[in-house]
Image (cartoon, rainbow, N blue to C red; front, side, top):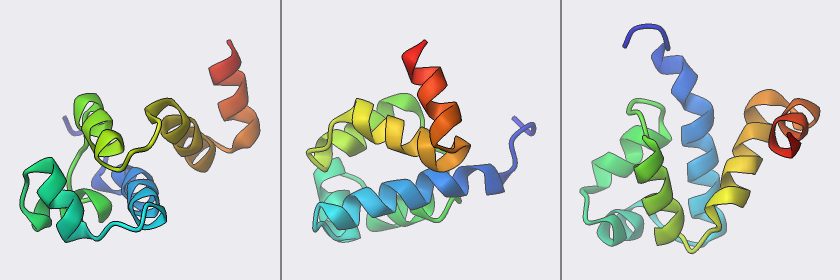
Length: 90
């Protein structure tokens, strides 16, 4: 799909990298938990790879993070606090 540029995935990658760091987990450790090679983690954290919903759930689970809270924080980072709050409270 060409309608979203690769640049569009960078905020998600940065957010997932922040979650990983907050959990005190290295890329190697997370890759092992996901049963993926380390470049898989690096690619999505750098916005070079898309992350689908099921992968997002697997990543948050591997980091022992609540997926709804992680997604809400992502919305706030991408859209700004007021717009994200309106979307999640509807």
